[in-house]
Length: 463
Image (cartoon, rainbow, N blue to C red; front, side, top):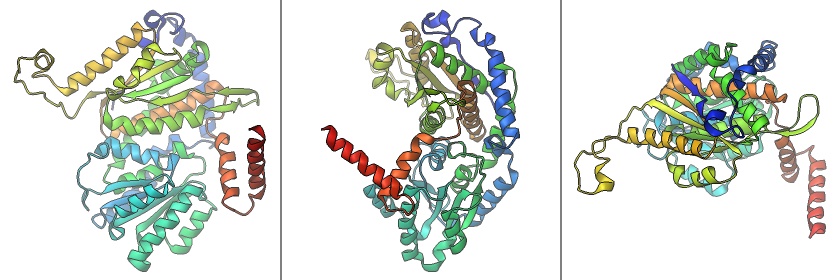
């Protein structure tokens, strides 16, 4: 397993002193980075944060593989009901290992598809259900709290849909992933005898992809979760090393921290040059945004910190976003994701047509072209003084994919330590949830319904 991080195009010698890091600046701040690593490691050893331990949880991995093997051949669809961190990781794994939708090919009992119900748009839900056969569908419901409104509402619809088609037997085709301990989803699962997989209390939703949250749907659709976790375990060892240049997560975290705090790069563009990494870009977007976007530092000071993540796909978005990136506000850092060894070369026919726009490409390959496009875009950005860096995965398989996800989780945690924030809470989204509970009539949330009415009254008065 090999993943490299290249920071050359972040340096002032490439993009100028105003926008780049000075020569030796990363090394001069290495003690600061090592302190961040030590602080995070201490918190993990005290049991506050658990995601670094997930790849080593052989009992959970074995239990999931056994469950998936027991159901093998009895379904052609896995329906995942979840939202945010309960769904994005599984989608990223599906796209990364089996190909982006909708080009995965036909689905069968030997090659089941993954359908994710991650929104409460009624048309989307109805169309999704109409596309599935309830007698050939396994349902996985994921909610850390056990009370997420969108997930519970959708599951009630799916549960009824299954029951109408399968009677009492439908419960054997429902699996639940929720926090270990009290929770309404867990209570229902116990009452109706659904299979339950626990999520450790010290693992937040957006850091949970290598728990049952991501591993269960991955195993059901045929991904080798053993290899996935072995790659992540190997990366975990790298991420604990205090050698900045040997630790890609710490290296990248420090670089982005310095660009944010010293150079004003308040936006990071995750720019994969592989369609199989496109789902991962959206998973990363939540991880980086929800973890680092915080109003206060740990000592209570108002800071309104964060670096806004944006997802772009190479080469597609060279034709939709790069004009802005090259000539618009210079407030961004670009992180390219590349794959060194493509499984497919995409050979271009060698016959020449006597037309210049065609003939220079004859006999070459799409793999060569997409790599040239990425390197050319990086060079064009340097010419425009736009800092950029590159993660390169040696190949795209389970080990590298699991390692890259673990790397980005560590990078996020380290960046949080450097910013002196709690990267594992999410207070910014909680008020909206409470308003929703109030508007939907959940007992105990009447004050939030009243507060929402005050908001509406304020809106009328402001007109």
